[in-house]
Amino acid sequence: MKTLVLLVFCCISIHSQMLTSVYFDYDSYTLTKESRRKLDSLVNLKSNLKFRIFGNCDISGSSEYNKKLSESRANAVNKYLQARIGNTIALESVVGLGKEKQINDNSTEELRRKNRRVDIFIDQVLRAGEIKSGRTFESFFSKKVADMKVGENYSLPNVNFIGGRHVWFPKGNKVLIQLADVLKNNPSLEVELQGHICCDYDNFDGEDLDLKTFNLSWTRAHAIREFLEKQGIDSRRIKVTGMGHLNPVVYPERTEEDMIKNRRVEIVVRKK
Image 1 (cartoon, rainbow, N blue to C red):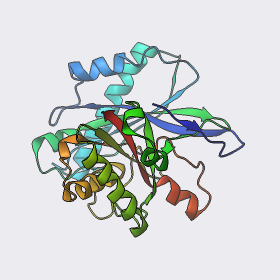
Image 2: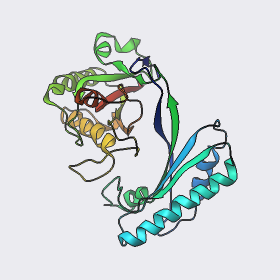
Image 3: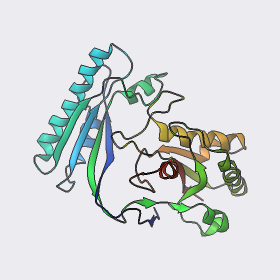
């Protein structure tokens, strides 16, 4: 992915990045074959990094029961990683969150399964110049689609969101209508919308205050896909991804303006 490096701060900061999530069967804290495969892929990470592990449950059962179950899931992942990685990477914390961090509405079994999970974060040191941002989408409109490369990403200028919500400020409408026109005029073009949040570095994603789910970055990107659908764009041409707090354009956020800049959606060219 082509990016520009922005010099946004001049000190060393600790930044948390989500590595992966592993999922569990109903009422179980036994690691599945797929979960073990994911955890095995972390063995070759470099040393001097710190893991943080958070266990979660779906909405079934009491808060007390789910708290214990989520702790058992987090501890199962902790134990497995300790055996595979040993002392090369420190384990900063292992926490069971119970059913407090639902990332969707539990309306189907598949969605409930995604809440039965353990999220694994890693703390890394960021130095001046290491925060990355996508290219501005203004260049997307000025370039011929034929000149674009698959994998290039662009920030949608002026498409920024109200804090805690998947609602963008009205000034973003013009850009989104332009985006719809680009897609209409290039029917083979397929894109990915990547949603972002600000400020919450203790969790991968933030709470959508309207939906009461903890997948705010995803709901922001999804809201734009729904807007494009209403403009006549086939949703199958648009992939939606929640990037959480990864890749902020301003870090740390010191003002409301900084926060607004990070509450954004970027677009990635997937197919031409």
